[in-house]
Length: 255
Image 1 (cartoon, rainbow, N blue to C red):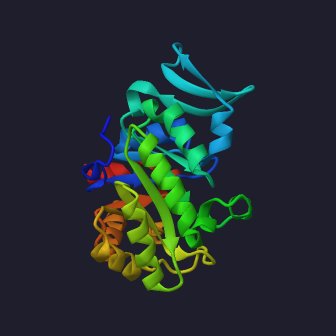
Image 2 (image 1 turned 120 degrees about the vertical axis):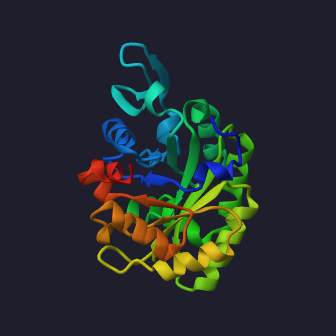
Image 3 (image 1 turned 120 degrees about the horizontal axis):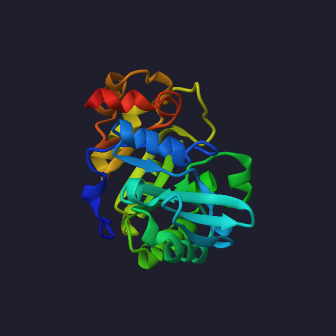
């Protein structure tokens, strides 16, 4: 496992983005087999994880986090444990830290979702609701970094004013994270709104930690398109969602 605050862990990586109801074990393993470097789980709310029981499944060789009859998270121990990033939704430093203590030994890193604009996340004070809550961001990330045995990251969206985006990045860096994922759209923007590659590039110039560029999936059809997105954003690493979901073999073209 990488050590806490391991920035090298996030350099020059091709990453599968967190996808609700999609980023589960079968898709993650397929993408890894085809050449992805890292895979994110779907976003899991801290309180749901904390209600789970950890079970070592010797038949499947997995670690299962089970809530009643539901397998909330299944990690293929030998095939992905050193390459899986747990993404959590949280509005509490205490909850985030508790998740780190519970799950940290089973994953390679932990990411906080600070960009999801869906009503459920916003209403719960999670996701994009955090973009304008610097005090809450600091509480969550500071507690998580302190409690975690593995690197911690945050995934954000652009602010309406690019200066506010840079201030947000500076705040997040000050909390001890190893990298920051940046989705190239603002809170009120959706696909097919244009991904603002040039604003991600400005963040890359400003940031002291690796930046993971996200948001280009609408124009990504081949591995060459991934490389083009990487060049446009100048980011160290790139993260894709939809094309990885429909064509996991897209990563094979890098070999």
